[in-house]
Image (tube, rainbow, N blue to C red; front, side, top):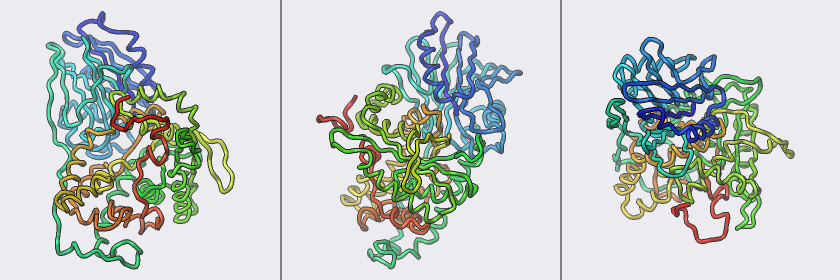
Amino acid sequence: MCGIQVLVARSEDEFDDTQWGRLTTANSRRGPDAHNELTIQAAQATIRLGAHVLHLRGHQTQVQPIVDQDSGDILCWNGEVFDGLDVGDQNDGLLLMAEIQRQNMEVFSRIEGPYAFVFLDRAHSRLWFARDYLGRRSLLMKQDGALVITSVADSVEGWIELSANKIFCMDLNSFTITVHERQGIPKVSQAIDHSLVMDVECSSLGNFPEISRWQPMIDQFKHELMSAIATRVASIPYREAHQARVGLLFSGGVDCITIAALLTKILPQSEPIELFNVAFENPRLATQCSDAPDRKTGLQGWQELCQIDPLRPWRFVEVDVPYRDVIEHQDHIRQLLVPSNSVMDMSIGMALWFASRGHGKLVCKDQSTPYVGKSRVLLLGMGADEQLGGYSRHRSAWDSGGWERLGSEIDLDVQRIATRNLGRDDRVISDNSKEARFPFLAANVVKFLSQTPLHYKMDMRYPRGIGEKLLLRLLAYQLGLVQASTLAKRAIQFGARTAKMQSGKSRGQDML
């Protein structure tokens, strides 16, 4: 992973060194392991490129920007190639440079993984830049005389987040930008096999339906999700003996705990897994961190994980955030959100930033000790709600229009994943020199869920905590997560208690 910053102007006189310094400071927190800058002349443009590297792949840290000595081409790469290119233990940026030179932008139609990049094609005097089609990495742009491209903004005004379903190209002679459309997310199947949509019946599993007719889908879903998790943790280098390489932002909810239960089947038995559970003091509600709903379900989930794999060193980290810490860091977090700027963005961003920082207490039986998280890769459950019917609006769609309306709502949510909040989440989490990875948004998982008939994934005839994300809940139950499998969804800002920390009438959609 890295932080990218690029400035394109007609002459070096147009460079704003003060702004460049601010961008360097902001991006350096994303990539503390290596940093380099280049200033070059290309056609009619003067270009300054900077990159900051967080070493997560290969045996040695690869300094960026990557420069091809023969052609003079330059690549700034913030991403991970998980499929479509045989990377192994090599650095994916170096291999990708060669593939771009051989196939141009066509290579991005076949690689899988989160990314943002800037590529300078010296021979054709073009600057290419884009994000992956799901928008899992941040890349912002601002044009005010010079063109500025960056992973994270240095100010509030003027920034836009690049559309994820496009590749952008600047002609360095005319300074015009052309936009190239590309294939997006597959359409969600609207198929319903009415012979299988039976009357709602409870079974020996308590409130769950009879599981046998779901079993083939559960098995396939487990296979696809486990494959996605395994791919996302395979190449992480060991930095210290007996230290965690992988962590989860952990509320105890069904999304994150299912990832944890599959992860423990993949990593070596002796390797610790960090579970970061964040909770806030809320002065408006007069509640302490220990009162937060996510703290209670997190502890419950940790205990379930210890039961299904008692030999695993599970490291449950209580990240307690007193209100004074909120006041101290809120301006910094607000800057990371840009161009997102709603009250809800702030509530969610606050929870993600403190949780990913990982400063807390390690809980062990009846005692706790101060602890700072070691893992640089964090697995998150984003994407499960959109694909499996986890939001309250999905139940409302069912209530108003049955299967047809529900299917349309699910397809709409899946198609707009790339336009929602993954770029924001990347900016917030990466500020702590951590990389977020999203198994539910792996291409194989998205493809499987898009092709799976609706009634296997959700059934709103069942009550809240059962009907939504039904396929995931059945998988969790079979993994031994009995209590977590029936927990109803709770948004992070309410579970961690970051919403409405002060008195007032502000709503989530209000601007900051």
